[in-house]
Length: 386
Image 1 (cartoon, rainbow, N blue to C red):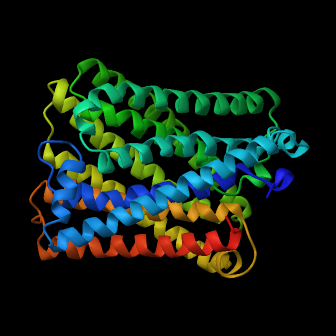
Image 2: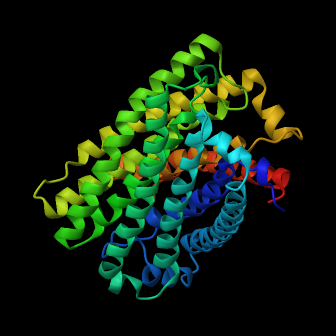
C-alpha cells in the first residue's frame, strides 16, 4: 500500500514505539540478572539463568520473547515507513511540508534510526555469544552510527530553523501544542546513544568522544527545551490546545528519560576515566527530580486529553491520527526511568534492598504503565493495519 500524499513523517512514531517497547523489556534483564563483570547483562549471564528453573528464569524467558517480538515490529515498520517516505518525497505535499511548521516532523526519521542502533545493541548483547569479548571494537562503529544520526538531525533542524529565521514564516496559530519538541526528542536520543560508549568503554579516547558527543547534543536539547517549551505553552494559554496534537503534552516524558539516562551514563564515564568519583546521593536526587517532573506532566497530559475526549476520538473510535503513536513513547519512557529510579536512585543508595518485597512493590505502578502502553500500541496497530 502506497500512501504517497497521505503519508506523514509522524508515521515513523509507530516504529519508534515498537523499538522502545523492545528496549523496555531489556530493563528486566538489566536490573534483575546479576552482571558484576559487565555494565549490562550479556548472553553468557542470561541464558544459564534460564536453566535454573527459578522465578527469574520465567521473567527472563518472558522478556526475551517480547524483546524479539517488538524488535521484529520495529524493523518491519521502519522498512515500511522508509519506503513510504521515499515515495512521499516525490509529491507536492512534501514541498508543502518543508515550507510549513510541520517540517520539524522530519526529525522523527533520525530519531527512529537512532533508536534502531539501540535495538541492535540490545539484540547483540542478549543473543550473540561472546560478543562482549569484541565490544571495544564495536564502540567506534556505534559512535559512527550516532554521528550519522546526529548529522541528519542537525541538518534537518538547521535547514528548518534557518528558513524560519530568514523568512519569519512561522505560523503561531498552529503552534498550540508541544509537537515542535520532536526535535529535542531526536537530539536527546542521539545524546543518550553517545553516552553509552562514553560510560562503558575502557578506552579513554572512545570514552572521551562518547562523553563529548553526548554533552554536545544534550546542550542543544536543553537550549531548545527552554525555547520551545516556553513558546508552546504561550500559544496553548492563548488559544487552547490542539485536540489532535494533545499527546504532545507527554513528549517531555521521554525527553526527560533520555536526558536523565544520559546524565547517569556520563557520571559513570567520568568516574571510570576522569578521576571524578561518583556520589551515590547524586543519583538519588537526579532520578527523583526526573520522576517527579514526569509524574506532573503525565497527570497534566492525561487530565487534558481526558477532558477534551482525545482517547475516545483517536483511540477507541475509527478516527485515525498518526500522532496517536506519540502515546507509546511516554509510557515506555516512564517505565524505563522508573527502573532507573528504583535501582540507581533507591537500591544503589540502600534505601530498599534488591529483590525485597518493597523492591517489587515499587515496580508495580511502572509495570502497569508498561502494560497499558502495550495495550494502546496494539489498538493503534490494528487501527492503522500496519
